Length: 500
Ligand code: ADP
Image 1 (tube, rainbow, N blue to C red):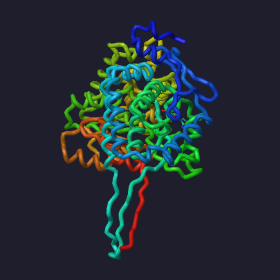
Image 2 (image 1 turned 135 degrees about the horizontal axis):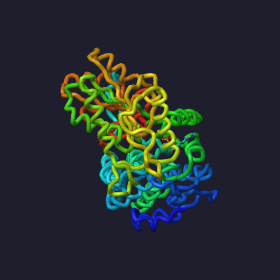
Image 3 (image 1 turned 90 degrees about the vertical axis):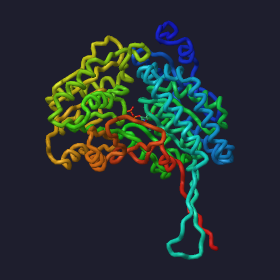
Image 4 (image 1 turned 90 degrees about the horizontal axis):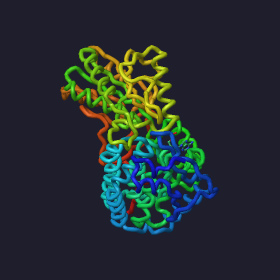
């Protein structure tokens, strides 16, 4: 195991945290996995093992679910006032903000992303999510409904917490995904078992310490580390869990649906994408070049909404592709904690192999490389050069499948009718996000209407806010994260009718 204390890029504080004896969080206590097993955590910039964390399994899942069940059925959580819940969420946001630099460092070390990005994006957005949802805790309400029959009844609806919620998250934004999941469920009055991604458990384990410090009652939040098979699958199948909320691959999303069928627990899913980016000739081309580059290269393309299909009008195709290729070639690869880092390593060896093999399959199928390619030139770590492919066609794997890496396929379009361009943009099984680049307001709105995607950005991409609903059409998911809309994921609706 590599000792982080001697790594000049890692602060003493983070080295101490990472090397500690890690524990899962069940019923307000930090405990080892029942089996005593652990599994390794890697630094993706070097491939070294930096620590071990508990490998929870079914017995731990049962303990966590029972704790969450008690906290929901008999515990103080359901009896606590909405404003009390809101105050705790706000306090957690404050605590997180006080430790902003520390979380950014942990995230960068564990996931590989640049520290500078984690510091301005991942951690502040997570803080904001807790605060935004703290506000909703006191505003979850039903409606009074006039009966269409006009009979003499008084009817209204109540929005009530759905109960015990299992939440399963991926590794691309470890802390932020935890915040997206925990904050709304807790605001609604649910209790939670959160399963962290096995590749990136560290920020979630540190967050468990802050949750404990904030004073959430025991059992309200339980946090487990472990593998998909060992923890995710039994959680999704558990009879005492009322709801499972999952973010990850479409493939595992389908397994979750099957596992949930046993007790028909409610399911929400935020899954994959293959987001189109459409650049029209009247766009501000310099802005489009930098915006569409960051649409794909932000977070190393490890975003479900990464703009991985770049459709550019033929009049500006060469200029845009040349511009994006320049941006790609200029990006400096380095460990996330290196101050010169503009792009870190991919999260794991598995992802590295997968992304490189996609690039190779694109080349084998006839694509040209305008920038990047399968060889990174960096000796250690899971680095992949930002890559621009041209001469692709809609049947290629690189155009159809989610690569989840810094690889974009650029495709020209002509003055064909708008319907056809939109049809091409919609031609995947996914429907998560898209962006449109034009100065023509009417065109922008027309395209936004035509795209079958849960988010459409105009002259921007990857803009997130706690207030904006996010989720997918088609095989990109069920339900929405964030905004008022996410409250529907964690509440049941009850209609009450009183004879007058
Ligand atoms: P990725 O390909 O991005 O790693 P996955 O969908 O494989 O995404 O994983 C996302 C999350 O789902 C992780 O926390 C992982 O452990 C979990 N997971 C994987 N397989 C299963 C499964 N069969 N049931 C439940 N959760 C799973």
